[in-house]
Image 1 (cartoon, helix red, strand yellow):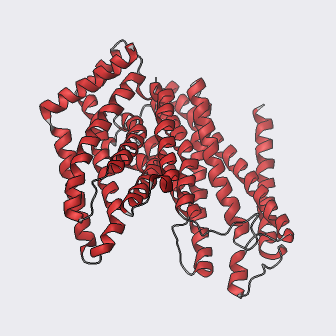
Image 2 (cartoon, each protein chain N blue to C red):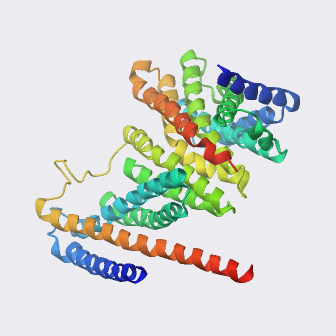
Amino acid sequence: MRDRRETILVVLTAVSVVLILAALYLALVGAPDANLRSETGRYAQRIIYFHIPTAWVGFLAFFVTFVGGLGFLRTQKRSWDIVALSSAEIGTVFMFGVLVSGSIWAKPAWNTWWVWDERLTISLIQFLVYVGYLMLRSTVEDPSRRARFAAVYGVVAFISVPINFIAIRVWRSSHPLMFGSEEGGLAPSMMFAFFFCLIAFTVWYAALMWHRVRLERLRDDVEALKQKLLG
Amino acid sequence: MAYLRKVAAIVWKDIVAELRTKEMFSTMFVFAVLVIVIFNFAFDLRISGERVRQVAPGALWVAFAFAGILGLNRAFVAEKDRGCLEGLLLAPMDHTAIYFGKMLSTILFMLVVEILMLPVFTIFFGVNLFDLRLLLIVLMGTVGFAGVGTILSAMTAQTRAREVLLPILLLPVAAPVLIAAVKATAGILDGLSMGEMVLWLQLLVAFDLIFPAVAFMTFDYVVKE
């Protein structure tokens, strides 16, 4: 059983590497140039093939943390907590990636690193929620209490995200809409590269999750062995 | 009814304790005044006259939020320090009664501080805040802030970091309350009617209902051993 799982993990990792490399090719070479006047703008525009999938994974990961938290509260099983923790850690990294890649794009496109636009603000808040989540975990020693607190915070914070989004959306907006807008939307020829990248990032997330969950399980095993040896 | 009596008993206990020590109320109030003084320093050189109106709602709610965090922290840390939380948990009642009791007493303390802050703010910032509708917005914002703050405070009081952790967990989650409350307050200063601010009021109502409901369902996991 264990061996077959390991094989699947190796395959999944290999597939995600190939997909990400293909996504990189599509984003930089394969996709057609955007209909923008300045050369810098055309180059900068290609960041969306990585920027949006990163954001997607960043928010998806928090949904998984929320589900993991709910699962833990219902069953009190360690495996749910491991899922929540792993997803939160991965989500933190991706959310940071969104902030950085967005800023890099914003400089040539908007001539500023940052504006307090709805999606930028919600991404920053989401990143801070992740940081709070991990800090909360690090300050509770008792494992069962740590898991319970983290689960409750995961649920509370997840519910606040859409409310936050509505609040910030009503507050202000200048971010380009990717779909359904007349200007600044994606041309049909770009859609393939875009969705390919979206899928590639999702598979990559799944592979990372699997690795992280496996790591935490191994850590638990080592801890149990240590206890057995010493006790 | 029995449930409400238990909630009321906790609120009453907090009020009596506060009337004897007066430590929470005085700290919150002085701190809120200090926040406003600091804001005056910070803005003084750059902003004057009519433009004070633009920063006033933000300064007001920052003072409320910071003072509220002080109050929220005390709500559970004080119980924890004196070993009273165990006593409360042993009382024959649903644990969520503790949540609602603590939430109500926090709201009460915050409201007293806020109502006293309004004239102080009116004097220091020179904007007229005497408006009954503003009281409604202050009430709604405070309920939302304390509603989500109380459950997070119950958690952070039991962590190693204690007081320091609460603002980090609370402020990102409570951002919609602050945005909506600041916007609604600004609307009143700008002379808008309640109808023009209905979106912000709806947001506040939604927040005020959702988070106590979530806390009602999850509070047990926060306090049980």
